[in-house]
Length: 134
Image 1 (tube, rainbow, N blue to C red):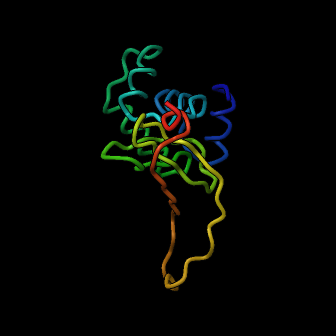
Image 2 (cartoon, rainbow, N blue to C red):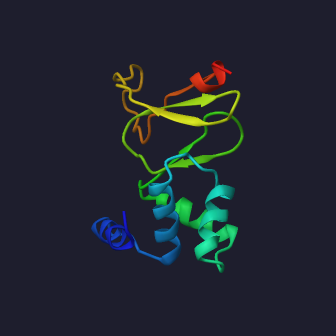
């Protein structure tokens, strides 16, 4: 997705298209590896040396608030980010630390009548095939 596509998407969602938000979203959209904030910061800083970590955090929070990205907390203390906002699960490898997406059909939850659900998360952890075969 190029910058013009991102700007159009943001306009459709009535979301201000700042250079910071565009750069962070573009990186996440193109890098579906579930990077953490330090990875995102290091990579967007290459093209935008004036960006600070605070700038990246602010862009991430705005993108989350607008529903354009999701935070992924599978596998530890570090928050990772995902531009795939469709309902899906995450598998965290306890050995290599990678996070993998998988498709899932979530049944309707019982016992939440009257609740307003904003997000559904499914996390698994274990050992990925690459690490298992080493």
